[in-house]
Length: 199
Ligand SMILES: [Fe+2]
Image (tube, helix red, strand yellow):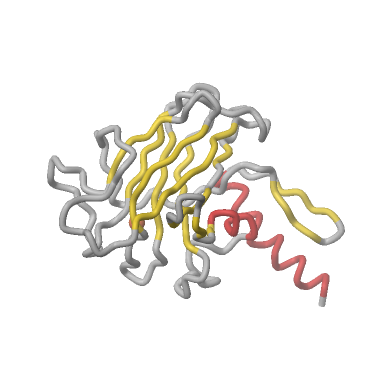
């Protein structure tokens, strides 16, 4: 039974390696990966040209509970912080709509990591849409020496996170985050990001 299970896991992992460039480590029947943040689909709603801002909230959405998202960006060695890197973030609005048309760039922004690689922004937990779990998109691109990273943040306890949707590999669990209260009694989640160095 143990062997059968391992073979099955290896079977799906082989696909992940070619699609996302992960390094899989198999030891004693357990499979782990390097620290690199797993890729997720870019989706059809990315839009170039979002403004630099750390607050994605907007007028008319006062009922939503503010959420602070924090984290740190690291390089391919899993420990060197990457400073001054631009990250695109976006999610749907409270009506499950992605703003593709207006100059408002609602629920879209660019943020920049600080000298220690830290980033943060304030928004709210977006609603689920189209059968997908609640999620926030990230895109980091055009960083010299590193592969592009398109990924998504999910929320622990979301019943829409099932085996057969996009979150299905063991290392994807690192992107399913628990909301906690920070020192200012604000809801917060933390997602550290690890880029893959180009070889
Ligand atoms: Fe989305």
